[in-house]
Length: 180
Image (cartoon, rainbow, N blue to C red; front, side, top):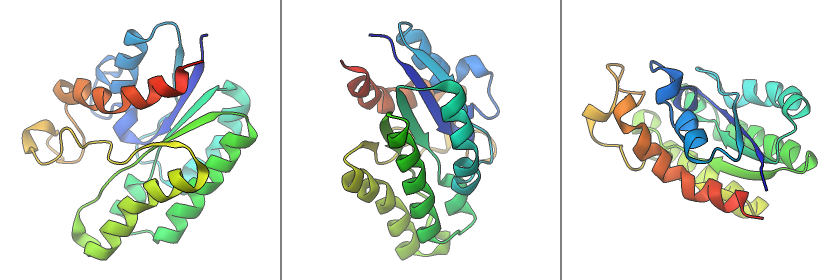
């Protein structure tokens, strides 16, 4: 059965610095053409801004599946972990209220704000997934992290060449949500 999938993220899903056709969401649409993938990702998006935007997107798109890929910008700005957690939880609650199957895509951040902050940040995604009994990809960039050649000149955004690897990380979890 065909599903509408709302991908709600930041620059990592918005294909920042790339042609839209090179991004992982577009590639996923090509591999699963029976489903409709709506990419409502915005570069620079924080969890707080996403939370403000999500109700209108849920109303407009009426998705069956909600993929939340937010938080990296919160972490890069050193926002409190509680703020990230509360915003993501509120988005999960909105998705559940809209009768969506939900998946979180997690991130990890450098230890600029300390190892404790970085660990709490990363753990937030798995903790929320367990609490809400939803799927999670704990680290979105796991297949490409650690190799500077996989990133654009800003050292933050993946290149077009590695988008298929990112897709391979998230596709199995998304496919599970699409099963009848």
